[in-house]
Amino acid sequence: MNSGEGPHGSGRYGADRGGIRVDARGRSRNSVAGRDNNTTYIVSVSTAAIAVIVGLVILLVMWQPWQETDTTGERNRAETTIGSELAGGPSARGAPDREPPSAREDDEDPEDPETSPSPTPSASPPPDPPDPADVAFASVGVGTCLNVFDDGWGKLNQERPVAVDCGAGFAFSKVTVVTTSASDCPGGAGRWGWGHVNDDGSTVALCLDRVFTAGQCFPATLSKQADGSLRGEGRLFSVWGCDRTQVPKGQNAIMAITAVLNGGGCPRRTDRQTLSWQVFNGAATVCAVQRTN
Image 1 (cartoon, rainbow, N blue to C red):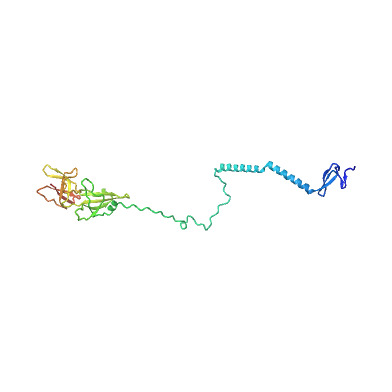
Image 2: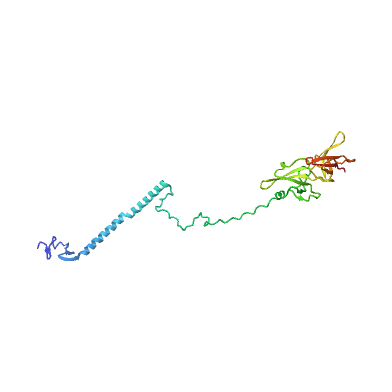
């Protein structure tokens, strides 16, 4: 039996044991039971590559590096969120690195009154109609005659002035001054200051002089003197019905005007005593007698 040398050279393994040997030309010899089987080297390399790939797959399945990546990412995001909250609160965000884009030259200036849209004017409610009393007081001037007088109880018979013809029998007063306060009006018997407050808060006052005419009547308080004469206090701005049988409270007589004089004394009568009153600060005298039933 030889020492194990084959036809192509000497070998380490005996022919009866068999073995695999890779020669220098990229082929392998497989001796089985005394026979040589030749297998190409590329087959052996492919088998080894497959084994390596299978091993890598098993290693990746066991290691699962993507899970570590996901966990690390979640942790990094959590740390970033906590850091943001500590720095600027829950809504803190990093400022952008780039500068905001500058306005283009052709952009319109929103503050430019020529380019800004004009607001649509809202419809204003119609103004309230003026108060009739305000209009009445504003329409009255000096020299206007009114159907206004004291009703006998210390108040006027009208709420607002109404102009009338000065020649009419019911023209009982005349405007002498228009001012802002009744306290500015001249006082004295036969006069009245009529004040009014307008809706806007302004004030107006009409200074009135009583228009006396023979035949008119007014209430009065008469008292008998020691010598038998009468002395009376008349409500000279009042107009009272001459045919009335009652007088206002506090009064006891109805006086009928017999004359209005700018000077001189009242004419005497034999049947009744004539009484006289100075009016308009002495500018005129009213002569009257007590009316009898």
